[in-house]
Length: 252
Image (cartoon, helix red, strand yellow):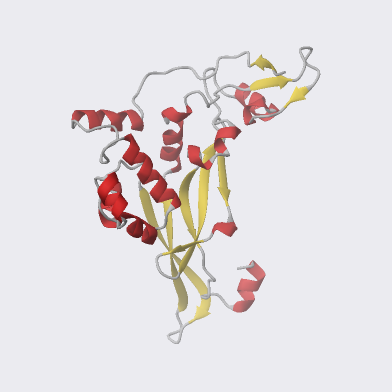
């Protein structure tokens, strides 16, 4: 059993109404007379595309499209990997990527007695826009909590339970410090050095992901729900513009 004590103050006051990015996309499609599954033919073709992109490599997609059964029976709106990728490029995009170039000056000298430098690329997305995107996703309508709770396993309230972020004492206490009607939105950042990605030639990057504590942990843990979004690629470098001794001390 799960017994809930609700927060006594006013939380998540409505200040107005606005269309989310997802509603804007839908309205634009309807205004152009497009089917909800555009640029694909229907829900079945959309499902096939999702499976191909998530489960099949690009070389294998070409092999799949060349099978006689695909051209004779499936009759998809795309006929090759190239035309499929062109169709995917027409899909609405979320928060745009930005590139920040970083020049690192080391302590090693060149033959011209100038300090060596190394140019790095930081690819990132606006985290505030990504949070707005998560908050506005209609898939999470009934999976998001805006108010803290205290949860107990017994009706007497003797055995406390902690099963979601909003059931913790920190959230309850933080809500009390905010103005009436405000909302706590804990940002969760994660990175995994075992998931290094090859990026543009020989460059390696370290992916950074963002999610929200307002979204149920059962949803956040399912990759298919897309409750965690990629917000940055941190550049990885040996920083060879620094001397070996400096790199050792700084643990580069």
